[in-house]
Length: 276
Image (cartoon, rainbow, N blue to C red; front, side):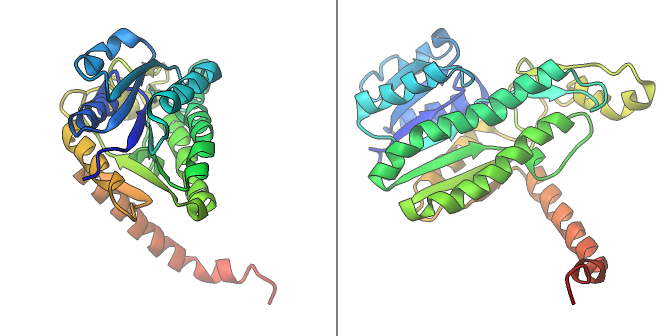
């Protein structure tokens, strides 16, 4: 493994971001670790000052994005891998969702991701190489009750990442979407906002999501996820999409199998809508 690559990882205080930061630092990469509060990542820098740079970063603040990217260039001279990991969850029925909370989630999960991406693209284009890794979700490919607006943020990330991959391919820049199922991170705990249902018809349907009943019991291992991400970053031809977790794999395969059956059932209606 060539360990001289420069990584920027957003959201390193907990979860995937922290495990990925630890994995890349231990492997000897040059790593820019970020969090909204520096004291949350101080331990990652301790003893690793030559190959680690800690930056305060709220991805909704353009000035901090600019400072982070320029700091990476100033210390390491290039940017090879950007991992857009920073994100939040929100649990509610669609009808009852708080608009301020959902807009905040879109600002972080979608716009923050895109502002980070656009900040590093000029450097990657000039060096004719790079890899943008966007932490999406199984919820960007399949939808669930109680997380409809979160699904919306991740569907948006999926769509724009697929377009981006086609736009930047000629610059030898790769784009990968990471689509995990439930992992033991803080996503459904402290990092998630919630609106409890006041409409009894929704209550039973969304209660498991809003009440965080699976929190701490998830099947996914964040350390194994981090290892998988590090491994695909070293591939000459990394995948556009990488499902992580058995639940992610089975859910998505079942959904797309059912979708293909549905499309075939309605094939005649579809093709007959063209001029004949």
